[in-house]
Length: 353
Image (cartoon, rainbow, N blue to C red):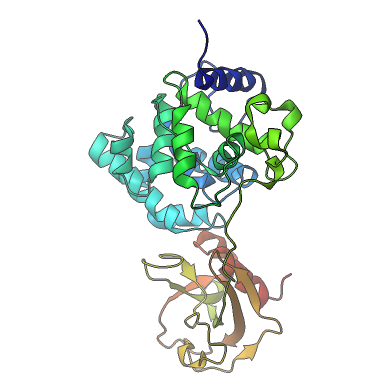
């Protein structure tokens, strides 16, 4: 029987995947059933983060919380602390909420249908499709950044991202197979990560080379087009490193950020609001009236939508007056959920490179 174009693409890619699939900690070995918890956990971690970075975090999470019920029972602060360094901390809060929802609504077992997965906290269209396909082999269309690039080149789609996403999704759905949908999704990801790379794609070893419109036209390396990004603004603020002599040793004042908003629920070195006004009064937000000394260089941290400059001030509290926050022993700072920008403040205040 003659294959359709979609069937040809499916079989060519799956044959390639069977020979060249990546071995990843969260990926089931050939013939073995996938663990929905591991699939979900890895997909949440991999958003906006590289595979190399995620491997260590994934191993630590799975060792500490082997099941979704274990994760649901964990204190949120423990989850946030373990997450520190992965960024996008709303994902960690939603991870915990989702684990609780799976336990409460589904008896600790992930649902297999996209619609039910979409109803869980922190799971969007992509993650629902990825879990449905990879964990349960449902015919779900999985489109991440790698897949966007592969499909854009396969069909020589000229419209820039993000405007081209509806067409990319439609084209990807046309070739998503009924059987081995999970393998097909992972094969597309592997193809984009190892062959159809952003720069200098290896077209000569690509299983879809003969079908790729962009390769035939000689423009594979130019696609996908992207709209020009808006300039990233700079925000400014002051961070206040306040020490005192505690019962068990030196302590520093920490404060919890509001649950909603950037770095919600994380611990921080008390700081002023972060504004685009570099002349804004930060001193009115100092946690205590002490003699403050400025650290020589500001802390620079780049978030997705803005660049942050924090002037770091050091001070010592002699008495034990009331302050807004908690005192943390310096030798136990690792026990607190400090985001990356605050670990930079810690290093700056303590004079460590």
